[in-house]
Length: 189
Length: 189
DNA sequence: CCGCTCATGTAACTGGTTACATGATTTA
DNA sequence: TAAATCATGTAACCAGTTACATGAGCGG
Image (tube, rainbow over all chains, first blue to last red; front, top):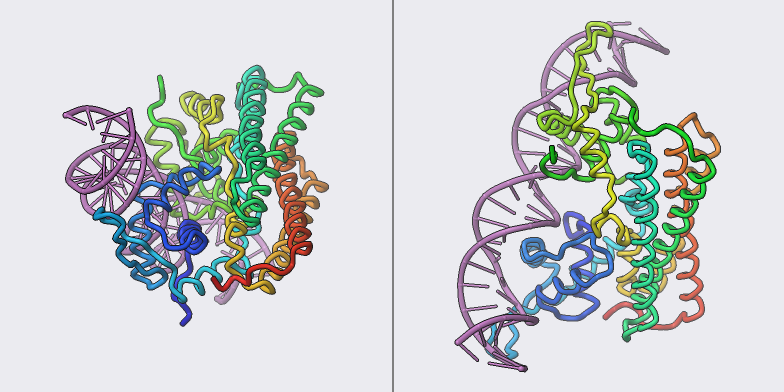
């Protein structure tokens, strides 16, 4: 029963959502992805519906028609094979891409910050700090609220919060370093 | 001169590399991406060569044939329009996806950790901690070495280091939380 | 009745992936 | 001379994007 291919991040995530929320419609999964803290996935229809179809064809989820009203809607549930696949995706063992340094668009940009003239560099850091601070505030707010989410969600969200706090501390470190060494190349190379 | 479309992360990154390293071959860019700390980009030929072609067609880089030996090789340099595009990509202003919580495969998985039976959960955390610790050691080693990389690279790498350190602290927090509340659902829902 | 949310899907595109193919140059 | 590295590229594929299209049910 070695469930064939592995799952992509989004496939694993959707499978996990259907498992954790219980039988769900594709639409509910979409909404969940859209409201999630990370803007990384769009949760677009064009992503979810074909993905759900793939999982169903592979026997990892199964649909039973719902009769709430006469409105058509398919409710999917995770099959035993699906739970096995989910567990396999969760790991361990982990491929490098899971444990290695996760990508950070701000960090990627910082490698090339020298390409900006010095005043813009300062604005870069100022706006980045401000925006990250805003995001952080939203996360802390959500953490206070604690809408009966269960311990796993709370713990995972703690990870997002820590990531953002670390990022902010890093940005401050960068800004201090730049203030100490103000006059270098202007970026017009 | 509004340089048309925006750049993808990889396009911006490659443009930045060509700018920062000076005139480079596509191969050199590839190698740089492959050796970079983050395993996020493969730096495969199938990604880089078409991408370089796109940038050249858009006038953001320009190739001058090199004559080092008779080995064929194209050396690309960033044009003024390319520098403008690079600066636009760097921002500010930043779209949400740049400043929002960056994706973290470990965090994504933790949302669904309940799906693993309790012993596997502990193994998940143990192996994750160990692997992240290993990555962290590599990064610290590289930071000591400091191979004449310039201040920007050093500062950006500090971000990766902080991200990994924060992740590790978070994993430890999760483990402590689980140890305090050992006996809950077994994950066979 | 108008507009919003629920709900499902398709079409066209695009930016990556792996795998393959070729050949020059260097080094052991 | 054999193997590794430098160097460029193509082909097939795939998962996710935006945008579009359709329609039921409900609240003001």
